[in-house]
Image (tube, rainbow, N blue to C red):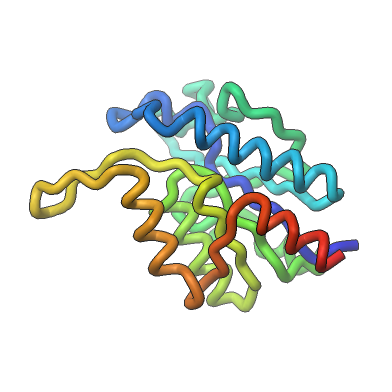
Length: 184
């Protein structure tokens, strides 16, 4: 059994109901995320799906939006719910990983610079080896304090830069899946 798991963070319909929702990178993201999921499934890796849950709004269970994003086919090994940015806080994910001997994580999902990056940093601090697949993350344009709007591509590049060789290895979908074959 492999000690590697794929983590799919917050890939949920809730985002379509946020004011910043933008579909510009959606097709690219869905293709890359699906390729990662399919590759992990083909190799028999655990696929752990994380949903962000809040008491009110589009991230509340009552909204009906806390469900897998339309257009994505995933059959998770296990589903976890979180209420913080890191998927490792209060969700039980850390216990599940330890109990199942998982020491290597492949991180993907929504939002690149928020929950995906935070989970990556947290996992690294806990001693996990992390592969961050930036192309299998989705984010939205953001405007900084100087009024400059950053594109999703710029945010992905920046996030990859600050994580690389500090908290994670940055990899493409194919590189991440190739590493899992070598580890098996």
